[in-house]
Image (cartoon, rainbow, N blue to C red; front, side):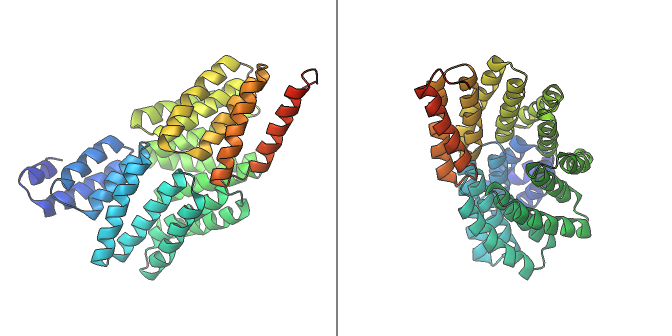
Length: 348
C-alpha cells in the first residue's frame, strides 16, 4: 500500500498499476470491496488502465452498483481489444456478462459468455475457461434448465480440480449443490455446500462464505426453520460487514421466509420489506420477484387479498421481463387469489 501511495503521489503509473493490481487481487478474494475501489480509483488518477477498471468494476458490482460497474468493465474491454490482449478480452466479456446476469438479462449475459468461452480455449486459459463454464451454467440454472446447468458446472469443476483452483472450485461446489437442491435432493445439496465451506474460509472469501451459509440455511428451512435462521443471520452479518448489498438482500429475504414458516408474519414482513428497496436499487429483478411473492403470501395469510394480488401482479410482470421459469406457476397463483377475492367465503 505504501509503494502504491508513493507511486501515485510521484506520478509513476507503471509502478502504481502493477502494485495496485496485485494488492487488489488479494483484497477481492477476501471481500475487501471498499478498499479495492479506493485503490483502483487512485490508480486511475494516473490515466486509463484496463486492470484498474476491472478491479473497480468488480468492487462496484459486489457492493450493489451494477450500472457503474458496467461502465468500468466496458472501458476495460475497449483497452484490452485495442492492445490485442485476448485473455483480458475474455475476462472483460465474462465480467460484462456477469453484470447483465445480475440485472436479470439472462440472454444478454449468455451472449457475452459465449463470446468469452472460445477465446479462453484459444489462449489456453484453463482457469478462465472454468469461470466461463460456471457462468454459462448459472444462466441455464436461472432459466430453469437444471440438467444443462449441471453439465456446465461439472465441466468447470473438473478443470478447477485439474489445475488446483480451490477458490474457484468452492464456487462451483456451491453451484452444483444449488442444482441438486432445486432437483429435490437436499442430502446431495448439503454435501456439496459442506465441501465448499472450509475452502471459502481457508481462502478468506467472506462473501463466498456468506453465500454458502445461506445455501445451508435454505436446505434446513423447510423442516427446521429455527436452525435455518442461525445460518441466515450469520450470513447477513458477514454481508453487511463486507458491503455485499445483493447478498444482504438475499439473507433478509431468507430470514423473512423462515419467520413466515414459524408463523411470525410480522417479523417475516419486516425483513422482506427491508430487502425490497435493496433489490430495486441494484436492479436485481429476478430476486425482486421472490421478495414480492413472499410479501404476497404474507398478505394473503393476513387476509389482505388486495395487497397480495397487487404484489403478484408485479411479480408476473417481472417474470415476463426476465424470462423467469416460474411465470406459469406465479400466474396460476395470481388467478387463484383473484378467485378467492371474488368468493370471500371460500375455504383457503
